[in-house]
Amino acid sequence: ASDVYKRQVFSLMKAPSKWYEQMEDLLKSLGGWQSTTDPCLWVFHQRDAHGHVDLDSWSDNDDKVYRTSKVIGTVAVDTDSFLIAGAIGNSQWERIAHQIHIAFNKVRLQEHHMKLDGMRLIQHPGTKEIELDQQEYLWSLTEIKTKVHPKKQGATVKECERKALQGLLLGLQWVSVMTRPDLSADVSLLLERVPQATYEDIGKANKLYRTAIKLSLIHI
Image 1: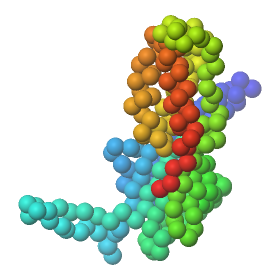
Image 2 (image 1 turned 60 degrees about the vertical axis):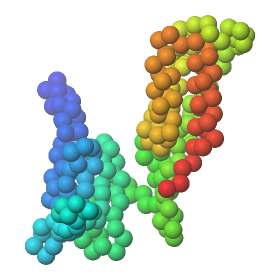
Image 3 (image 1 turned 30 degrees about the vertical axis):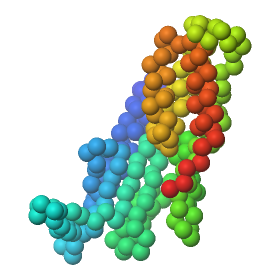
């Protein structure tokens, strides 16, 4: 019984790597190129009749010639979730997307309206406009409640308040990474203040949170 248990545990430990190997083999076989800056992103280029990447030439003002290729689709991978986007009406990309759907036919597909990493994505069929919405995630965060006299705003916070401040700022940091880069600088500066945080810092964090709530729907 113990041997069976060990084998089952070992197989579970290997499951993520096996999933990745299967996914990697498929995307490579379909002509995908793994980004060097973000390994979770796979890019697909237009190919010619011989299967080679179709390159275009263009020159800048200095008469230097550059070679570029047309991107027809991308696949972003997050653990066991895919975010697939590509050129509508492009026959090469439609074949690639179809093969991905066939290979992972047991995976529930969501089109035009989905959730990914605490973010809701909505694509309007007519305009193709995409809304990125983190309202639900933001509402799961909470302001830090304190009762301090205005003259004591410079006082050091209690340990429980420091932990609450760090939690709120880490949540806002995730939002800034996903949809609100305009919050990044303020969040980073406040995170540096956490070890010696004062009640004034908590006030700033609460104000930043209210700003994020107010402008939590981003249109692209």
